[in-house]
Image (cartoon, rainbow, N blue to C red; front, side, top):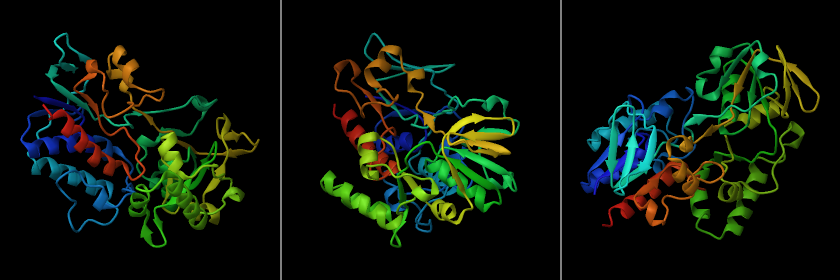
Length: 373
């Protein structure tokens, strides 16, 4: 049985690598002209928040001389080495417009120039495919620079400028830190409570501990996560950051939202070099008014407001209704409905112990399932 894979990022390559190892036929489609396209476009200082030992793709560890936390450029190089190692030959510049089921029961992926058909189809287009820009009152009238975090490269561009970062997820927190380190004057707009955990706790990476805790009962993991957070991060309410009533482990497991992995942003907030403000009431031509009534001037606004999967744009309407939840994410790796047999999704889950680790483990489950017959 042949397999069609959409997306040559880490998820798509993980499936391709496993199939290549087994000698199974597959076709890998990539919308751009290179592998790891999303990673190539991310900001300069980006590096993994998970350790290299738990972040490699199947059957090929990172080079021994890579640091514990792999940089963006190192990851891109590794992806290039991965396709060379397994002789994976993606078909580039094949942007999939629609995915549908044929009358004969095969899966069809249609691009501008081709229609690809296969028994199995694995969608690996990623949870951060489409930048999300919320409707912010007055934003269109702002006279300074406005850009989404996907367009951000380095804080050096904004040296000496007052920059508002909208949103304090992992990207927002790290961009604020980058701006501060590059000589800008950043402020983060934070609408609600935020769970923050240290990337390293007590001098050790937090991920290996999370992996061990994930094997224990949820109540114990939640208790340990909350205690660790209290000891390493503490109460930040005096700085404008409120901690939710639930721990970071519960937030991932139940709410499907990654906590902020702190790389030093909290220390700069405490030092006063990164300001925190509440949600935005109104954007003015040269300033922003916040929900507490305060108005601050800004030269630029960076929207660290996240992404959407965009799956509803490529899945036929009947498939979207069956497969996607209210957030636009697949409900699972595959559906047991016979009408959906052979359709798989990888790279959309937010596991407790790291996205790349989850991709490695879930790709094994998918390949085992699709090679059963």
